Image (cartoon, rainbow, N blue to C red; front, side, top):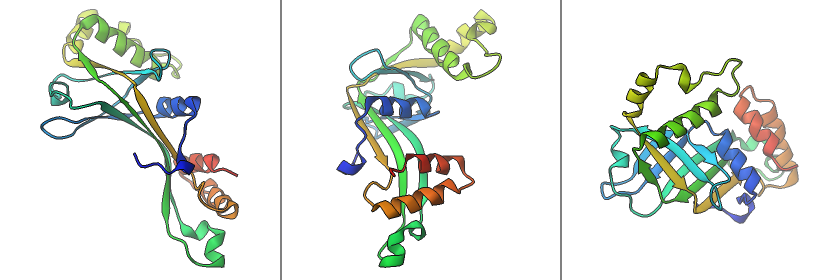
Length: 207
């Protein structure tokens, strides 16, 4: 990923926070048949390995898991993003030499991907994923709430994946390359938006 030095995010806690906040990631693998991409929720186990390990699952009918992978896989996580109008820049008033851009946060987690069919391991993954996404509910649903034979049948329709992260690229493009007055203008403009994601970007603009 092209990342100018001003936009590099090398803080482990910040990177993991972006990955955990993403509701959906994209798993990308290179194959002899061309790139394969699947959107899916992924669980980050930060304590497993130097950079953490990702877990998830794909549909058994999805050809991605059957195709031999060339090189490492990449899991792409997106954070908040927003269009930046040059009208917010002080520089517009001074010189007019401004153009639009886009601010965003993203993390690319690289590593060798392992696909597995073992029912016990699959049960562990879906249980952990379910617990993660049900945690905020007043009465969380649990895998054990469904009949065991029904869950067993559902597990036969998916394939698990494990991706130990060997390398992370993280980018936080938040107008760091603009003068302070321009950054303040961007922050004010985004803070006034009716879109929650744009207000989230406003909070990340360096003051």
